Length: 224
Image 1 (tube, rainbow, N blue to C red):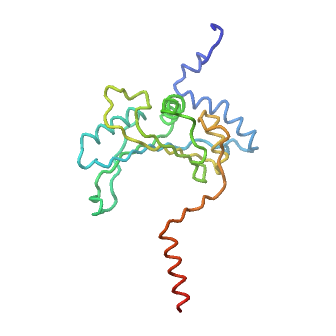
Image 2: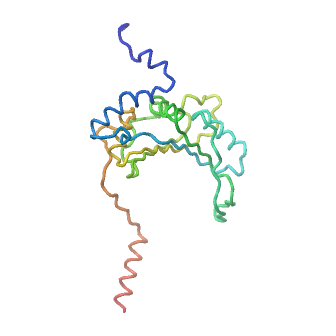
Image 3: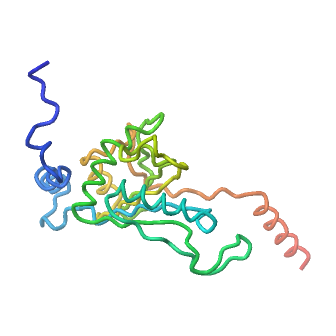
């Protein structure tokens, strides 16, 4: 067992390990696989947006500040408050009221967060069986959600407050979902076995009131 080396020492000492792997190994593989003529055609991660909705932000200022501190520890960057664009009296929301927090990651901080997300955060998720490959938006961007922030090792269980979910949106320069899927898979994103982006258009499920409105319109046309 002494001869088995899981992680090379040179790679373990690199600060931006994922970025180095992308430039040295992933770019040549994608260029050969998709027959790119120019290296700038190879898709890359443009930015990562992490957002967290906080419904009781107006009534709980301490909870909002605690959530901002948690997200800053997880991402390595201080988040900003997202505010309501207009007032909605039904939900007791005032204009410019803080409703959540968000942070946009680029460059070295982005690659560092992705490395921890893929290799530490996702495997620590309860009953984890891989992420879905159908969460692409059709333009090469991928989104994933978490139910609680405790999956990240930066958050200690001793100081863990209220569990809060968060959404992670990965924006790539890929023109198709197939290219983006291949890019994330080579980076180590643990997709479920037998997965892959589907090009099928999902049909909208009709509810009872849809059929009622259709039947009413048919009755009106018959009367006329």
